[in-house]
Structure formats: C-alpha cells, structure tokens
Image (cartoon, rainbow, N blue to C red; front, side, top):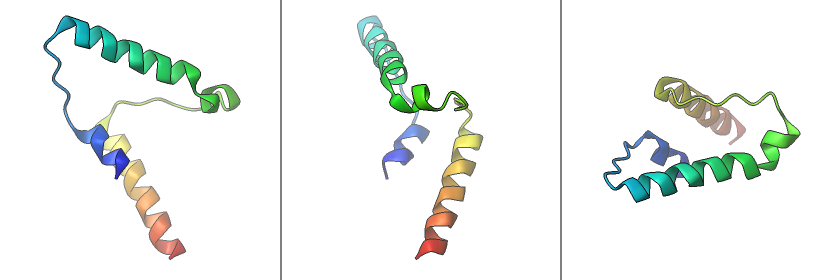
Length: 65
C-alpha cells in the first residue's frame, strides 16, 4: 500500500537532498486542492495517530466487502 511508506524512516545525509526534500514537501502541501477546499484538515507527523487512522480505514473497507 502507498500509505505504508509513511512509516519508514528517511535518512538524508546530503544537504542538497535535504533541501530538495523539504522543497518537495512544501510544494505538495501548497498545491493540494484539498487544503484549499477544506481548511479544517489537520496535519500530523505522529506515527501512532497515522497508524490508528490507517487501521480505521482498513476496518471500514473490510465492512464494505
């Protein structure tokens, strides 16, 4: 699953790569229509919260089958 990649640790040792990574994150966040359409979105980097939301979505998908 695509969301499983958010649980991996990222190690960047090159300053240029770090700058490119941060620039990509900033661009992806600012260009998203979802952010503009729904300002109530909350951003979290807490792995426990992300994991819990992912598990809730999995349960919902299972019920729909």
